[in-house]
Amino acid sequence: MARAGARHILVKTKAQADALKQQLAKGADFAALAKKHSTCNSAKKGGDLGEFSPGTMLKAFDNVVFKKALLTVHGPVKTKFGFHLIETIYRD
Image (cartoon, rainbow, N blue to C red):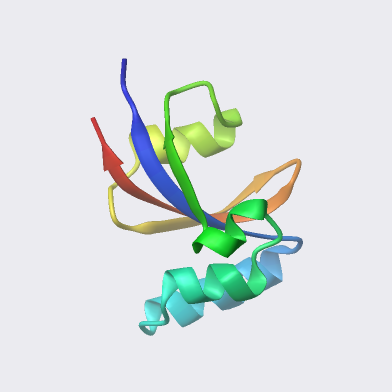
């Protein structure tokens, strides 16, 4: 079964996500921004969600992790929790 590792930053508004994505594009550290801004419990781990398989996360999240380019920040992706910036670290 396919597995992947990813990290994310979860915020309440699209505007926040867009602003953070711009900072990342300028070279800001993903983990540092996650620790400072993410509302997810994973924030204390720099946004690291560990390893998971398809169907573990919400569909919109899975679509990014299992179908989009690796090591690229995708988003904002809207879910019932807010807006995510997602980076897939690896996939098998």
